[in-house]
Every structure is written in C-alpha cells, then in structure tokens.
Length: 238
Image (cartoon, rainbow, N blue to C red; front, side, top):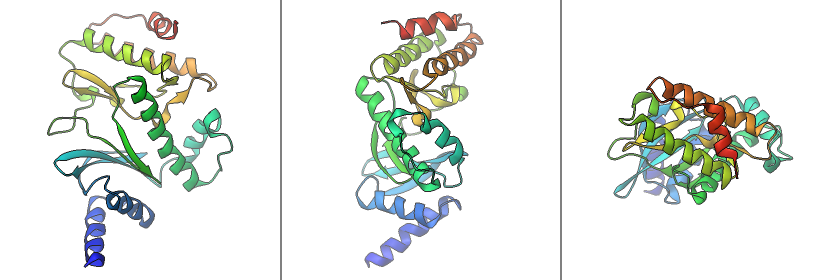
C-alpha cells in the first residue's frame, strides 16, 4: 500500500512538468514525506532558474520552489564564488544548485528575522525550497502585473524594507525589479532572494545602487519622483 501511494505521488509530481528529473522527484517526495506539504497543486511561475508551485498543507497553502537542474549553474557559481559565506564551494553542477537553494533559504531567514517583508522559509532539501504562501486564495500578483493604488506609499514602504535588509540583515537583494516584488494587499513583499549578497561581497553597494535605480525608474512612470542616489544614501546612512 505504501509503495502504491508513493507511485501515485510520483505520477502526480510528473504531471506538473517534464523538467522533473528523478533526483528532483525524490527531493519533492522527501519534502512531502517529512510534512513540509502534502501535495503540489498548481504552477505559479515557470522560469529559467526555477519553477514555483502552490502546495497544500492541511487547510493552508504553501509555496514550493523547485530549482531547475538545467539552470545556468555557471552564473550561480560566479555569484557565490565571491561571497565570503561560500568560500570553498565546489565547482560541481549539483553542488552549486543545491547550495543556491540553501543560499535563498538562509537569505530569506536572515531577512525575515531582521523584519523585512519576505516569505517565511519553511524547509529546504537539495533543489527544493518550501516557503510561506503569499496571497489570499490566489497568489499575490507580481508588481509588474499589479500597480499599487498609492504608488508613493508603496514605494516608500519598499525602500524602507530595502533599508532594513541592508542595515539589519546586512544583505543587498542584487536583482530587485517589479518582477521580484509582490503586491500583497497594497503592500510590497520582496521575493527571489537567491541572488542576494552579503555586504562584504565585492561591489555590494553598486548592486544596491542598481536595484534602487531600477525601482525609481519604475515608479517614475507612475508619477513618483525620487532621486535614486539620494535614496541609496538614505539606505546606507547609519
């Protein structure tokens, strides 16, 4: 009976995407077997680096991010090679992808503990990361698909979160855009922290400047006038 249940579970996983190799299926099944979730439900986002799904856990929903084995692991390595937290990282494809998943888990945990609005990380195993579901019955939309009713307030709250990320979590997102911010009940939730770097990382402040410039340009289209250099100074000021 247990074997039949396992086979049924695996077939259900396979139905979601042909990109699930055997190793990934085992990792998903492992997360399910330890109670991180009961079953995958539907895809939220299909990307080059990872696929994101909703999952059921009792009466609640959770989010499951599956990092693709076919992802550009060389780019991942370049990001982590200069990060003092990952010195000695082996230049091995699977090792890099698994470490990338762990990196996002730790970045989310670090940001969350600092008070930044990010999804709560629940568990990570190999290339599968389980997180808090952000949304009501449906996933909260990405900012690029859902403009806030009060762009000025939304932008201020976002910059405040970026400052907390910098000052308390000692991290820079390094890939911030309207695609990596959710509009949840008119408040920003920052996602996709796999690229986030420690402040000791070379050029961390330049990455911060790029993040803020991109966001200021985005909100400028909505009539929000901010000088990105002034905002960067405000973020890094003690």
